[in-house]
Length: 338
Image 1 (spheres, rainbow, N blue to C red):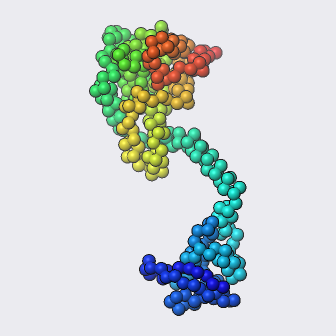
Image 2 (cartoon, one colour):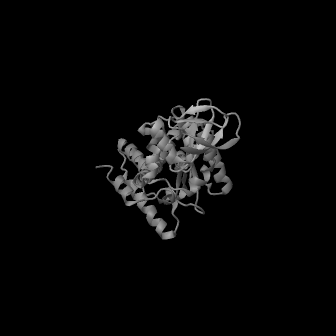
Image 3 (tube, rainbow, N blue to C red):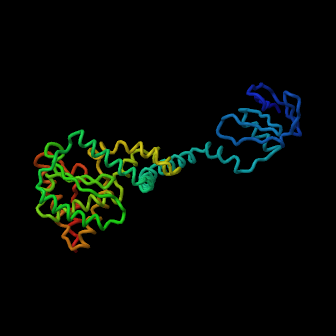
């Protein structure tokens, strides 16, 4: 039998075309005169019709695309374990290919649906407090330069009353975030709104406070925002949008790539929406706090409904732009006292 192949001597990258005469004992002679038996050859697994490598004991190598002949020689002189031909079997059977495609699609779907959120949570929990403090300061500076907010028009007395209840709320949190409440006017931009920065800085607008019919509704909003901070939702939201840095950080523990990605946080805080899961988690956080203190959480539910009505009336989405007020959320809060 004759096998057409390219010979590599293992010393240089040069290859030599040759035709090997293989006798009935499975022996053959290389271009440099050495003789080997087929039993001494290590044959690479077959993958479709791609060329295969035949490795020899002295480090030299043969490359040949005559896969059927190689299979025949292996059967005669050097039977391969069934596992070595598995790739070829899988590659050459259409049903196996179809199954592999389905498995790949399901794996990708799982990774996007569950894997990325899990990794983002893991990375967000690893980020040092110093990074979140820097992000908060940079975001506040961005808001100031962009003139998204103006100075609050609330009286000092109104601010002091809300701030006192806010301090009671954050004093219960075990995380150690340095919470700070900021009052802002946003009548010319985003209207009734509240934002939680990853540093623990929370902004609430005059327009949102004016819309509330009861002080407990404002407390509910603040508890909701504290829930976003405690669960690191803003960090996780932006990390989920950057899969490659997320994976590298999760595997290596190096947070430098994640920090670079988080530079886009200020813009996302205005434009992006929290996921339904994040909103529900923050709602449950607020609901639990209010229930523990005997506060009627339906006030927050009524505020959400009022905001939705106001947004439909003047076209200004306000808090709903980043906190979609759904019927399910309102029902959840209305059932808090049951």
